[in-house]
Length: 291
Image 1 (cartoon, rainbow, N blue to C red):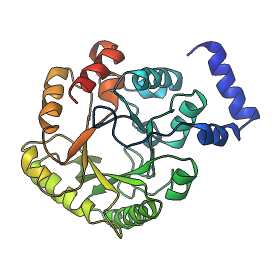
Image 2: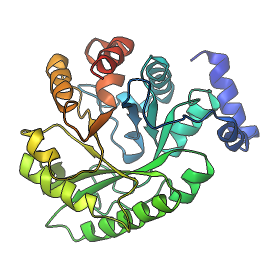
Image 3: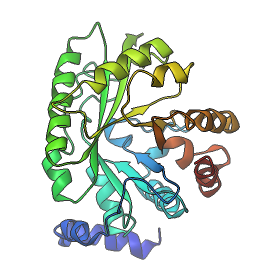
């Protein structure tokens, strides 16, 4: 980002905050959730608002907002990338930079369960709600849904996610649910990435809300994906997970998952924004080629 662009962005936020809503109203909306390749290829950038700033071996990688915006704008400019997922602060920066035209935009909704806190599982809705997503002209809302059998905070999260699914459906907007079975180990919340756990988590998530008509699932790669994805007929997107040095293996696993009938695309964040070698364009292009 050029220095004059940064100054203009900050000045707009200071002097003309209404410009954000104006930019949203001018945004060209996509005709479909799917791109020309028939899939949804989405870049995720909702990590910072949960205090999760690490990318690979860089503990504060996502703590530099200008650098993150540069990487996002580059990723969104690559052919075949037709969507982005983020919290209001990130998406509004991208709106003011003109980077969201014709993109599928999904707002992140529950960010209250901050990473590393004692209340992490009680993941309250502290960002977008269905009404604000609809008012901005965005295309859906995403919710993290972690189910910890030993944490009573789970039930509040489940109830809130169910309400959000129903509210989004009333606006005919996508409800993107990212479900996990989770456990607290050595004071930290860990997701159980097994086939059995993901089957259970997806089964619970698919039943949330008063209708599943607009519900999509966001799921990680685990063993025996064929069996896992047989748990529901809802459309699903494969998430990228942590940055890995073996990117070829990650791409191979995504390619295999994309052959499954319910899998409709990819939603990848740090793996493409902070890839090994730091060549964002090459990493994004390689992911798009899988579609």
